[in-house]
Image (cartoon, rainbow, N blue to C red; front, side):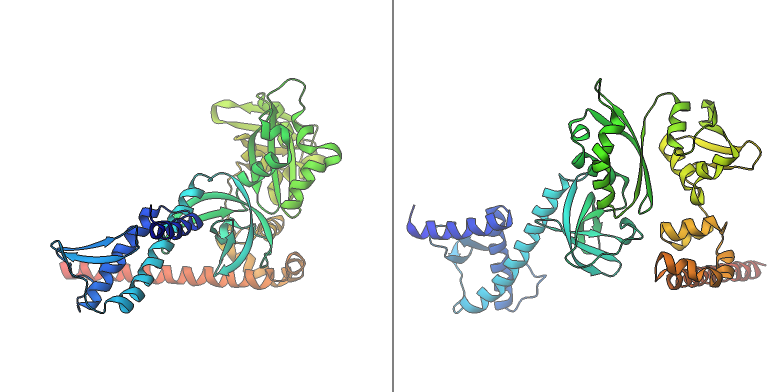
Amino acid sequence: MSQLKSEFMLALNQICAERGIDPKVVIEAIKTAILAALKRDLGLAEEDVLIGYVVNVNEETGAITVEKDGKDATPAGFGRIAAQVAKQVIMQRVREAEKDAIISEYADKIGSLVTGMVLRFDGTNMIVDIGRGQAVMPQNEAIPNEFYRLNQRIAVFIKEIRDTYKGQAIIVSRAAPELVQELFAREVPEVNAGSVKIVAIAREAGHRTKIAVQSNEDGVDPVGSCVGQKGVRVQAVINELNGEKIDIVEYSKNIVEYVKAALAPAEGFDVVVDDSIRKVTVTVPDDQLSLAIGRGGQNARLAAKLTGYKIDIKGVTAEGVSVTGTEQFEIDSLGLGSKVRNTLLDQKITTVKALESKLESLKAELDELDPRAYVETGKAIARFYKKADMAREEAEKAARFIAERESENK
């Protein structure tokens, strides 16, 4: 092997190693670039086809020549202009190949936890540096009541590779329930080793999570393992989630015991199960009713998600609630954060009209939750009505069109 070949291949391999791409991709990029430069030199359009032209790259000398029908067809003075055009096309192809290599690498990491750094904000999306590549965290994958700053380090869950108008993008999340599972796997050796299994997770990101755990080994306490000595393990997870409450309960195949555990911290209640419709009826002492239901119905809602059963909760004498864990109200169409939503549900505000009429009286309470909550809620209401007006106009147009057609047919 000649010295020239060593230098050429050394430079080529260095580029490929730095970007994690195949050397053949660079060679092909060079050939494509030279053909593009040749078209420009010959005054041809980009869509024109160069019939009979072949680009040769000599791996020993690094020399590039153009042949047509087996004869040298390298134009005179082709050097500088061709090199400039070639450089641009080569860099573009190398960047594309590098991005493809990164996407391919992270496709194998979907479902895992990584630590990233906030790089910048792109509209409502956040761009996160996750090592070799950059990931996108859409607004709906962020924790609603979290505020992010540039260069902040955060743990994120690699959720998927998604096609966007800018090409494929790595999507990460902090709102996904799986993030909590991966954090426990990181903090709890028993979970990482598989001796303790997280059976189910119910989460309202930024506010509260319930997880059900079971032991796969005799003598291992699943709840105690996840809590840790003096709560150090669960506290590490809570800190990573900026204070999100976490309830850890022991999974049981006995649905009565499972529901009782899921509704903690309420206690002292009776459970009647109807497996045919996956429903349980819970009768709670009146002094435990509000505790079992939780603020805005959250405790009962998470318990229903965790167990997979519809839960009817009633007091001995007081009126109760019925939840499935998937309840949706009109105010949910506004995209409010969980804290604001739960505050409104506490006030029994479930419609946009009711919220609009009471918004001014709620200003102080919303300001206490978040200085921007009052203004953002007002904007959300305005968007809701604007969207409704547009839908009404479209419906009226459609109705007029149908009426005109019917009139013509007559």
